[in-house]
Image (tube, rainbow, N blue to C red; front, top):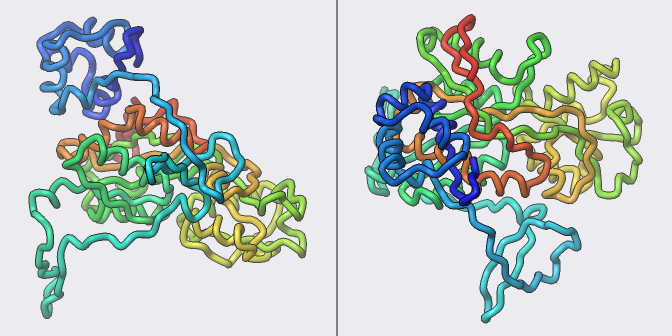
Length: 391
């Protein structure tokens, strides 16, 4: 919330993620429930004492709850020779020779492939299910790592923004489709699974799949999971620049001059394509390239940008990053799923505390195609297949 004095807060989001009511927080912090309601609504700014009490009660720092919203400073920069003419292009700035130079974040330049420094070197000993690891970094630093599995590049933006806000935090992102990410969460390999799956029966996103996973995994039947929103996005067909084949809908994919690229089973994008084909009364076998698979959103866009395929399903933000045309098919809710017990871990708390911050919201908004009105909101808590508590 943003009162007139430009003091912003995400007190409500943090409180709800911890499963606390306003009355619960008021009792722990030793202040009135009306005070908490007023602060959350942005009606007035808390005193220093109240802010400190709230941070202590929630187990975080004051700056995790409150910050000043200021007008962004501006400067003049020289665009590189390959800078596109688009208005509002995302860019990277560097000061070179006394001038600010603007480098466009478009296509491959928007996604950097880097050699990741190793935290250790592992050797598997004979007949042992574990690795013997020789550490190459400080153990205390490694303990401040949060691992996220998911497919959207927005996760990396969130991770980098959070690491800037919390210099002692490390975020490791693994590229997995929605079902794989959920499976990895259930196996205890990651803290957070990013998902954008839709259940046609319940007409709900992600939650039905989480319920099924908790029910079928014997070790998780008595363990609760929380579902927190990252944002909503448009999913649809990515088309070559200028749409040279004049594609207008999914029905055009059956044309003999059209070849698509698809995603693997378990990916939300493949699910969107299959539902769209079914709604149009089309068989997947009638689509050239239906069995040609790409490993992620960026690979789909790259295949279309280089002419290997004419169309494929991804998001509006990826289309914009590669300068591709876009035909919307579905608005999806992208959620973050984690076991409720992980909310007690300090690194996870630090990461989640940034979801409502302007640095994160502005990064998501500038991608294009993202709706951040629910970002950071607790969607529900799932305890058993028949026990879901909505926020």
